[in-house]
Amino acid sequence: MGISIKCLGPNLLISVQNPVNNAPNIVRQSIATTKEGPGHGYGLLNVKECLAGYGGTLKLVCRGDIFEASAVIPNVIYR
Image (cartoon, rainbow, N blue to C red):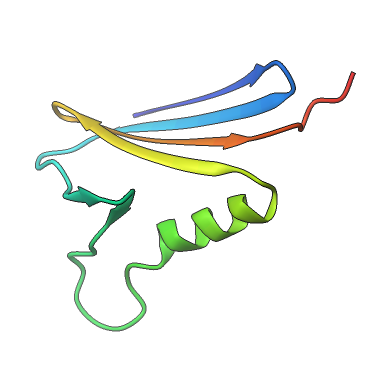
């Protein structure tokens, strides 16, 4: 498990990595929930909507047994 926060020019990059036993099915940068009952499956959607409000994006990838979610928020750092 890891997290990194970096400034790339005026942009902020936040990346979270987490080991997984089974690779999630990522379709159009979304993951279907496997949890039972109401109220599940909105976490990443909420993150995407929040980022969109700042002109940001969310990218989801799984490489082997490591899942990574990376958010970019543009023009955060002013010089």
